[in-house]
Each structure stands twice: as C-alpha cells, then as structure tokens.
Length: 248
Image 1 (spheres, one colour):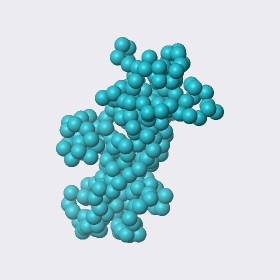
Image 2 (cartoon, rainbow, N blue to C red; image 1 turned 180 degrees about the horizontal axis):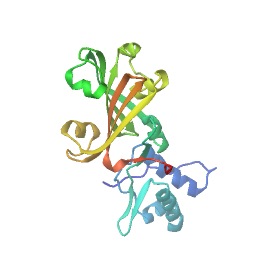
Image 3 (cartoon, rainbow, N blue to C red; image 1 turned 45 degrees about the vertical axis):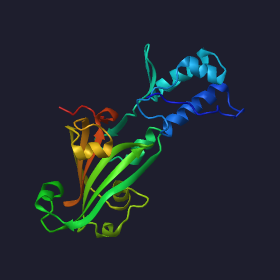
C-alpha cells in the first residue's frame, strides 16, 4: 500500500519549507493516516510537490528515519515504521505512557466487563479462593489508530470493592489501580507466544503471529490486588532491565 500526501502543502509561511515538509509527513504518520508498513512518496515526487530540491527532501527523510518514524530501504523507498516501545521489567508502566512516549495519540476501549465469583482457574492467577468476588475485564489499547496492546485483567473485589462500580470512562483499569490503590509488591512473568485466534482478531494480526506476553500480579502486603495479562505484537515491543553487579 502506498501512502498519499495531503492534497495541499501547508500554508504556514512562518515555518521553513524543511519544517513544513517534516511536519506534514509526521502528521500523516502520527495521526494514523499513514499506517505502519505504508510506502511514502518517493523523494522526486515530494520534491515536485513542494517545489524544492531532492536534497531538502532527503534531509527531512533522514531526520525522520533517525527519529524512528520511517524505514529507508535501498532501491525500494521509504516506509512507515511500526513503533517499537520499551517497558522496564522492574517497573509498573502505564500503557498510556508507553504510547505517548512514542509521540502517538492514545486511547482505549473496554471490550468486556463482568463482576463474578472467582472460579478454580482464577486461583493460580489471583491467589484467591473460589467464590471470591472478582472483576473480569478486557481492554484494548491503541497507538493512533492501531491496536497496541490487549489487556486481560482480574481484580480482587474483596481487596478493592470500590472498583466494582467503576466505569473506567477516563482511566484504563491499570491506570486507575496505580493511581488509587496502594500496592507493596509485584511479580512479572514474561514470555513469547503465538497469537491465538481471539488475540489476533483484537490486535489485527495474523493468527500465529509472534507476541510478547507480560503477566503481572500485584499485592498489598499478602493480599492479592490484581492479575493482568498484556499481549503485545512481537515486532512492536521489547522489555528493558537495568541492573548492577551484585557483591561477592
């Protein structure tokens, strides 16, 4: 798929032509008008549209490549790069902050929400006994117009009963819990997995596509608060840890 430029170049005369070209291209990428993988117009076509030299266009594309917005392929042209985010392994990072750190607009939607008693399958996830009230919720996070992450979460309502009536209109479940509920310890599990049919449909990837799965449990002292399973398309996310050598 080849991306198309806006019908008219920017009319802002206060900016240099170089700034105008970069702003127009960045705007098309960040807004989602140009999807990841889309080919952007060739240098000569951009130069003709803006009435400038190919050197000016080349400089803009080089800057966008260094910024991680596009990928330049020899003899093939330039393509919109799928954003790659980083999460700290030893921190609880809000998905919204991950997306905004990429310079992309963020939003989320609640796909499923149910208050129910815990079942046997929940016990190893949330460390609660059968019958304990839980909130079972599924959320999809977006970077611009593209699905960024699938979130499946269980919340222990005996620990945080006020969440039972929360509609999550402005804050996602994870952001709400971090901002309102104290926690003392957390446990991360990280693995690679192939997208099953349900995850593939939500993330708009092919079934079997590689995904990065982050599972986390948080506790307030010994009391479990929540278990969350975050599924990211594998080519758009990586985990980062920073550590120092231990003594001895």
